[in-house]
Length: 109
Image (cartoon, rainbow, N blue to C red; front, side, top):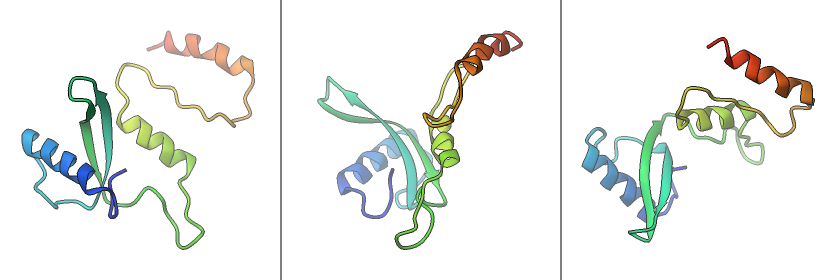
């Protein structure tokens, strides 16, 4: 999560990534979701994707800030790749019968 107060080194990595790829100018946004990967050759993080945001991830005021489940799934979905994406919460209260439906549903696509 890139926002006000994030380490300057991460801001620099993001700005370098955007400068190399074109697009947003330095300081064009205040918040973004950043996908990084450990690069063994460089022995450090490498930025893979940057998705600027208008609003912060944590909403609310004071001690009542929250990051809802839908927001978590949406942030994951932004970086998802492939043909199928399944988003489940660990506390959805489902049973094994729901898992048996997935292969049959995917056959229709």
